Length: 299
Ligand SMILES: Nc1nc2c(ncn2[C@@H]2O[C@H](COP(=O)(O)OP(=O)(O)OP(=O)(O)O)[C@@H](O)[C@H]2O)c(=O)[nH]1
Ligand SMILES: [Mg+2]
Image (tube, rainbow, N blue to C red; front, side, top):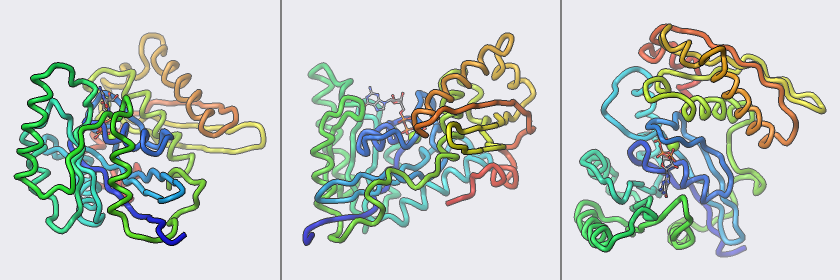
């Protein structure tokens, strides 16, 4: 195929703007977990879209923020900035109704030689005319801050303008054959996806305080012909968080397990037996060594 194109596209921006939702929508498969809470994504995760004319390797990244400076946050920033520095084509994602100074600070730090498309997400929320006008003005302001290849309002949720975005992306990718197996949708193994899905349920089923200091460790992952057996530990940073994960009479942990097991089984395509434990490792997110031991050093 002479005009086939392929390449990496980094997806960067503040927490909670919808980067992972966008990658999942573009790839057509839930490769990255999502939630209403900031800092859901903690790794560089590849989502692969293979089409007849192109293969796009999206790199989802942790949301960039300056608020927290603990060891885990430093690691998350490193993961995101390594993509900004290394990947020549970037999607800078922002919430169309909430572009803050922190968003603009990220724009100022984008490398001048990169090819960046500004993606203004959650456009489904734009209803009234004065919002439309504000979005137009925002586009003009952004164009003055950085030479964006284009500025596109989209909705990862409704699919609005995603095909337009894909067309523009394909046009800026280099010519070349597919870089990965055309059947593959991510670079992450099922074991990793299983831990992430458990963490997703934690993020979705717990209050605002906990998730940042919670992580999931897979202790045992045994694939046999009719079934996969998974033992996992939910690690929290404070003793007071343990009862929050357990819930009254262990009901919350049970629900986390039920919902995670259902999603993992769907992904793996076979029944899954999941057993969960909760353990306190005091202030793990503040300590580089522990952060790394939980898998957060694998750039
Ligand atoms: N209304 C609306 N909500 C959206 C859209 N895209 C994402 N969301 C919601 O925004 C929230 C955050 O989405 P995520 O995809 O987890 O955001 P993220 O940028 O990956 O966040 P981090 O991983 O924490 O950096 C979720 O509740 C999504 O359902 C959209 O197009 N419209
Ligand atoms: Mg994310």
